[in-house]
Image (cartoon, rainbow, N blue to C red; front, side, top):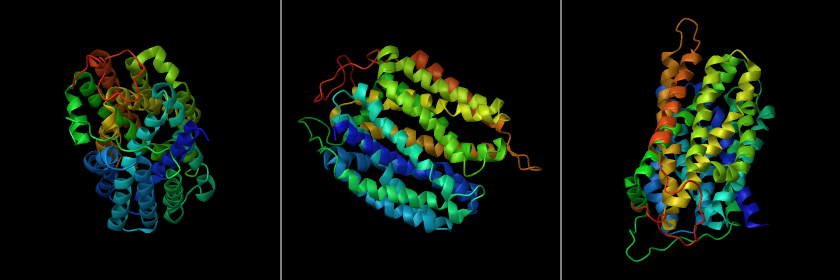
Amino acid sequence: MTASVRLFLMMVLQLAIWGAWAPKLFPYMGMLGFSAWQQSLVGSSWGVAALVGIFFSNQFADRNFAAERFLAASHLIGGVALVGAAFATSFWPFFACYLIFSLVYVPTLSVTNSIAFANLRDPAADFGAVRMGGTVGWVLVSWPFVFLLGAHAGPEQVRWIFLVAAIISFAAAAYSLTLPHTPPRKDAPGVDKLAWRRALTLLGTPFVLVLFVVTFIDSVIHNGYFVVSDAFLTDRVGIAGNLSMVVLSLGQVAEIVTMFILGRVLARLGWKVTMIVGVLGHAARFAVFALFADSIPVIVAVQLLHGVCYAFFFATVYIFVDAVFPKDVRSSAQGLFNLLILGIGNVAAAFLFPALAARLTDPATGAVDYAALFMVPTAMALGAVVLLAVFFRPPSRGPVAQPKDASALPEGVTP
């Protein structure tokens, strides 16, 4: 197989692990009787993992350990933790298993990006097609649950979300050892030995700081979608519980198309406009959720905007980080933004959206005012668009060819 195909399959397995359990995590915790604060604490696990990853895991992958071996060890441990989560029915054992899984899985999202960028001839043009494998994996893993879950599945059935994820995690651990060898980048003379500290200094660059703030806002919106969307589809829209994951996966189907054309879109529109379109996708989707909840066809169709939301903002951010940050801190640089996308933004969403839902629940009927709830992320997305449009001034309009051994910012850009 070519390197691109091998990297594509790496992404298939990597994101299938996540896609197996993500849509049903919060409903499953509700079935187990976990309180709102307990669910929020579980939701904060990825924030803890992303923070730990910056200082330890990504630093280790950057400086000390071959990336593919790091990936294999992490997925092996993560698979064991997922099995534990599947059979833990009380809160603290479940939380412990999920936290262990988070600590080893979250850093692998940065490392897989780093492996891809390190082994692609033209990352800006080719990363979208490779990352599309993750989207394919997310879609494929949704379909078995049509048969594994009933329309009104109980916790004994829903626990399969973790067992399926564990099986894929073990497969990913074995497959990782077949990936192209990606050794750590040794310290250059005079370069900070702490990769994470060198990555953090780049926040002193104005355009990086602006992007950091916007990424936080958009990550709260993005993660909030996964917190409330399954309950919205089943409770408000009226879609059967065993079909909701399939409906949500339509967004990933659209993402396949957008990831495939991402390189050409970036070349034509540039960094800023592409990112603005991605954030506007979030605003449009939540506005439709708020205004057209009574129309099943419209709600199903608007899931297709997810492809625009993810590819045109988050995937573009990963490509931008690889183009701008020094290559010897590539895992830490990706981890820095994953701290927002998967960490702080995830924690904020895990607390904000359940609290909003609780506040907007009619005590008499138990119905959530989703129209009011969804206007909050709509307004947040529009605010992020203004920040990007006015203050984000990247060093180049779009991707430019960079030497594979480049170890500094583009000319004229200083940390």
